[in-house]
Amino acid sequence: MSKSQKKILIVEDDKSMQKVLSQKLSIEGYEVSVANNGQEGFDLAVDIKPDLILLDIIMPVVDGMTALDMLHNNSVTTTIPVIMLTNLDSKETVIEAQKRGAHDFLIKSNWKINDIIQRIDALLH
Image (cartoon, rainbow, N blue to C red; front, side, top):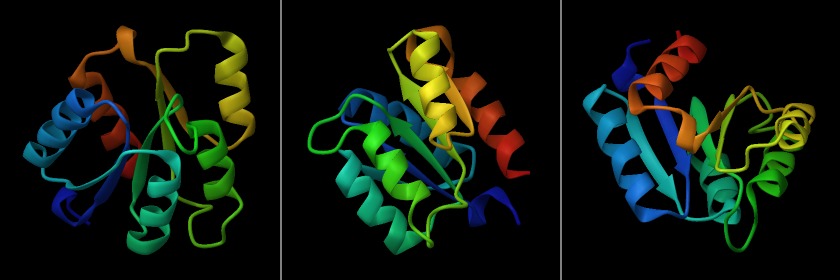
C-alpha cells in the first residue's frame, strides 16, 4: 500500500501544529484528516478508520489519554497505531501512555518534522 492510500488522523487543538503536520504529511503523500479534540478524534477514527493517529494529550472536551482509552477499548479502532504528541516531559506520562496502548511518544519541543515522518513511515511500512 502506497503512502497515498494511507490515512493519518491528526488529533490536535493547536491550529498551527495542525497546519504544519497536515501540510508535511500531505506533501509526503498521506491522506490527512484533522480533529480538534479527543471526542472529535475518536468519532472521526471510528468513521474513517485511519492507518495511524497522531494524538495530542492536553486538549479540550476529551483529553488525549481519555481518547486513547476510548480508541483502545473500541473494536473498530483498537488496532490503529497511536503516536502521542505532547509538551508533557515526564517519564510517568510516557509510561502511562504506553500502558494505555500508545505505540510511540514524542515530546513536541524535542523533535523536528522530519523525525515524525520517519516514525510514521516506520510504523506504517
